[in-house]
Length: 189
Image (cartoon, rainbow, N blue to C red; front, side, top):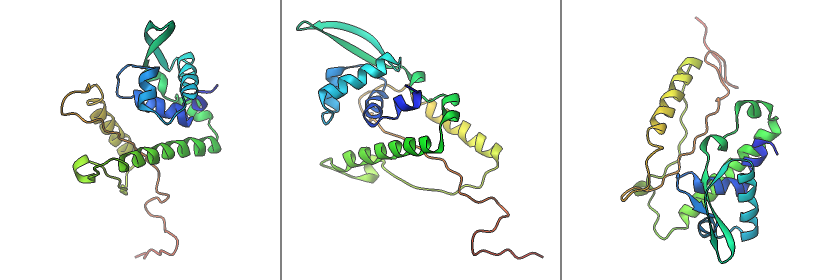
């Protein structure tokens, strides 16, 4: 199974997102955090991720005659590498982006289903900004963002900390400076 096919399945995406916080989990703990996924389905997808090396088994112990494993997300293995990304077709990218957006919608629905929802207090937001950047300026922006985020990724769960999901989408706007948008004219002097 290709890396993209492995990682972009909706159930496997939810399992991976659950493990993004860096904490190890048994399958029982994953079931408790993902109660809407049938047990057999969850076990099957966890096994696929472990066989592919995306999840590492960090502990095992017997529970009533069965072996219970504790899993950890192997960060580097949970990414689609450049070669696999380059091999994806436009339809593959559409499916991948649809899975990504569906995951965002599900996360937002789970947030809105809480008893108390206060977007300002909870730091929830969704915005879009238009930036005019050269390729070099874009590279600098992405480098800066990666550094800011990377500095906070090692934060462990602790009193006062709330797990926050940061999702990004960066797309070209379709226009280059000096070109006319439909219905727009430029005055030449």
